[in-house]
Image (cartoon, rainbow, N blue to C red; front, side, top):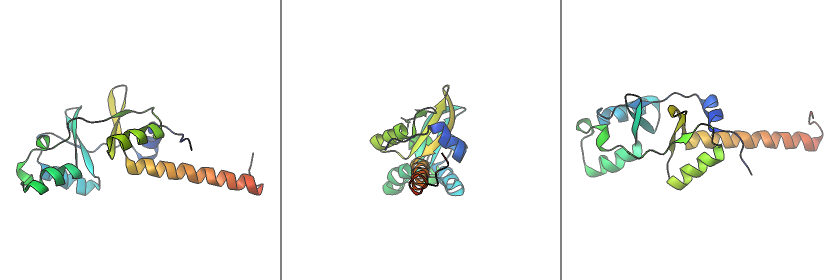
Length: 149
């Protein structure tokens, strides 16, 4: 099944709010913000420049498992520096392929080289389910003869 819809459609649906933290902030502050916002990752911004991403996975692997103290560690010391990002006009299918191949769950979105949002694997799965439900409804109406077209 070919998926329709572009990443900007997903952002229109979910909203384009960006949760971020500075590289100098403590890891503890980052984890606290993730808990307050109910998100699994934060973008790391220096001014308006994207310089990394910090996730719960970074925290568990680079702090907890090593017995480090999160209040004393700056975000920049554990963040993922190589951030995969996508353009807002790529398809949902293309974004899913990127996330699958790179084994990531959060994908910053850019438009005209400006950060405009973040999509998660959950956002894209929700989009796919919604699209499939709409297709099923149309087919049911067509089969039963109640299709408006």
